[in-house]
Length: 112
Image (cartoon, rainbow, N blue to C red; front, top):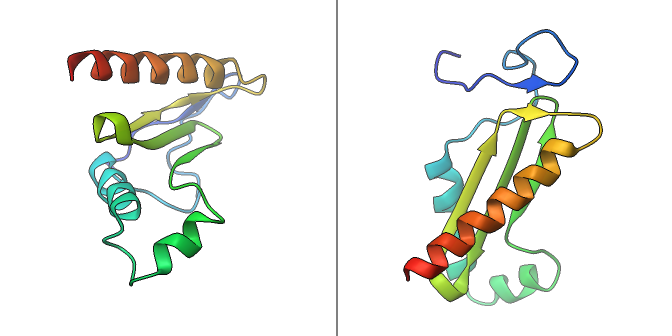
């Protein structure tokens, strides 16, 4: 637990990192997994097309105290993963996170 980022929900007085939310991952693990989904190296021949017809190979979601976003950007050949440790019931932090995520992408794209 010492390596787990603290998580906070606006209006909740305690750190949520000890609450059971199901899965813990590092940015590196998520990035590696997402790249493998998108480049096809995770699949047997023909499987990627089947999965791609049903799923987007990206992630965004939240549980109290945590938000995560992961997306592969083919045009810059980059996986961008963002973890945030604050949530709120009105989703103000979610909206702010999406603005920040778009700015990060634009900065990286400009550098290419």
